[in-house]
Length: 171
Image (tube, rainbow, N blue to C red; front, side):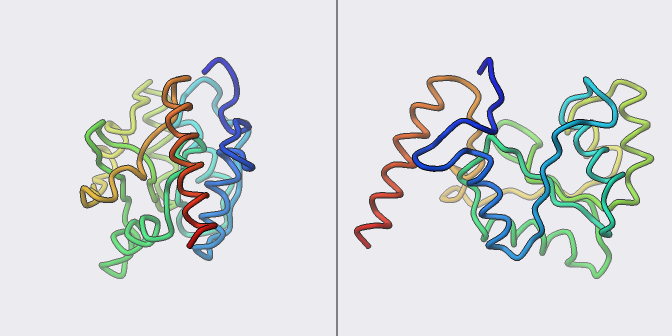
């Protein structure tokens, strides 16, 4: 996109504020990672930073360019991660592959750092090494995983966001 996607507006909100509001409505404490502990290591660097700087047992990672996530989606990830009574890594699986949202126990930080040091920077590789569970959304919910990466995707997202906002006002 050629600029920081977090500040891009969809209607009256930025993409980041839309994602953050969904997390907070879900009862989660939201925190934004602005600078990675290990620069130039992509999303895996952000995951490592979040795990190393958290005081919680686990961290749910969301992407600022996925403004259509819902509380239901986050609840599904949380249930999958805690379903056995023991916190386990969970990654979302979509038609594009392994991605966000992802929930990881903070104890996974050393393994994440090892992946960064080996320059294995894909979420797919991280999921494999952590023996993460993969969860897929039902087809009718798949649109929530839409990333905004190009000007064309942004234009389409603005249309959808505007339509949803109008429907809420009318309903």
